[in-house]
Length: 280
Image (cartoon, rainbow, N blue to C red; front, side, top):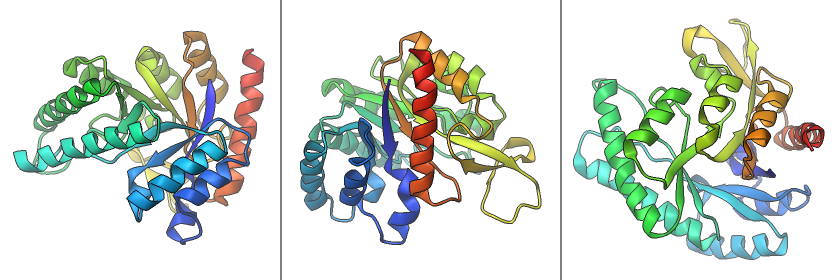
């Protein structure tokens, strides 16, 4: 398995205008790992930055583990849903420019007045169209477990099965399962055969009176991001399952804790490397 970092881990620095995509690549180039996950979200001048990013990736001998887009098929009109398919097509084209063959995709967000079944129908239709374009270009779409429509492992399996394309697989976010009340070990076992990409993420529970920013999960549980291996995720067992399955893709770190992001990234890499050594 290879180690990478998602730029989302450095979101706080981007928001404070202390880091852009080029700076992120240069930073990861100092960490002694294999790759980066780049997001459509972070470009400010895409054409110009893309050229510089490709040069930096070559300089630091880094791969792009996946190119991530933020699509949402829960849209009222057919025209709006076609625009979401176009986001996938643009993501596929950009991934190819970055020498990556994986595009991380979402399903959508459940919101009134739409029912779960209506939303699922739109998601499947949209992903079918996106997968057709991906197949033409030999790129795999990797559906992340994210939100309430594809948050649980069984929901992800169902959607991938109903789309019915070998060019739609899974981005297994090992932390997000906790937000929908599913144990990461059980979820990874259920999805490992569909894995194209893995988000290395951890959360810890906090009490109801916690004053900082926290994610609210199903059942009222509150979770805060933490260093990988120091939270609720049984990271050694998750990595053992992935290793035993023969998964050879990326573990892309997505740190979301309140600490300094560079500390969180570097400590998470240290913890993960230590566990991986025990699997050899």
